[in-house]
Image 1 (cartoon, rainbow, N blue to C red):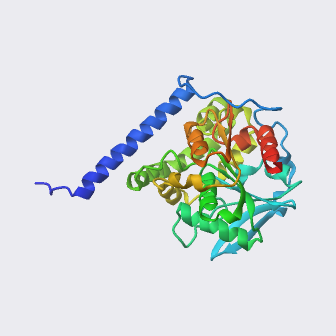
Image 2: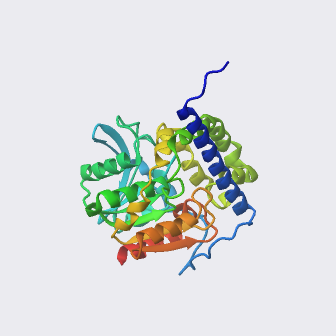
Amino acid sequence: MSAPRTQDARELDVSVGEALRKIAADTGFALKLATNRVELPPPTPADGPDPYGSPDPEWLGIGWSAHRHQIDVVGTRVNYVEMGEGPPLVFVHGLSGAWQNWLENLPHFASTHRAIALDLPGFGSSPMPRWDITIPAYGRFLRDFCERIGVGTCVLVGNSMGGFIATEVAVAEPDRVSKLVLVSAAGITWARARREPAAMVGRMVRAATPMTMRWQLGAGIRRPRARRLSFQGVFHDPNALRRELLWENIVPALNSPGYLDAFTNLVGYDIRHRLEEIEVPTLVVWGRNDRVVPVPAAFSYQRRIGSNARLEIFDGTGHVPQLERPVRFNGLLEEFLAE
């Protein structure tokens, strides 16, 4: 006769069921996006050129080793890239990302700004920290990192989880942020989810990652059909992007020991009720066809932040507008910085 199940075990079963239903709903939304069977909000018209990708990117001709640095921040070794002089502009990558998430943007802004992009602890070339990875901990780390490299008040630009972290800093350390840019930011969609089932799902994803990555680095890069299947979850049209760009955004993910902790603690951390405290000018940029953080979250960010937030929706764009439409993104950010 089996032992009676505890209340905690029964609640975990319910939570896992809720998580799986949420995943199924998100997957269904992504499938509808892929087959054009979901009604999307109208995009924001572009004011100028709006090509998808960059056929001859500046970043390919840069010797990046001259711009890479390492520094200790509260006992944690951190890898970062810095170029240019002027007002500081700090870029924060997303989950399974690295500083290369900003390859199309750093050279452009280095002509007018001190452009900085870092590998968060546990991602890219930054090893795991001694402290537990959480969104508030990453927020405090970002504050300490800026202090360590002599950056006071700055403009924070964050993509996906990086947008969530930038939001945390803007709420917890408002004097340190002069302007905020949220690019397909995480934090809204999974705010009410429980972490226990998220951890289980994260472990499943992490276990499958090595095999998935090997395939992506092989056929997924070389063959157009496989490339589309491999990357269309993140990029709207991966075959229209340079393979070097896809490569630079895959390889760092192979060295992301912080993925599971970051994913687990991103889920269920709810900051929505504090978004109205953000008083600095905020630019919210989203891909209309984002399958990772669907576009309804963009409207939630705009509504909760209020009149300080401006929303721009890029048509034919996935989860990384800064890489998919760099000409439009850079022009828009340049205009926002000048306002």
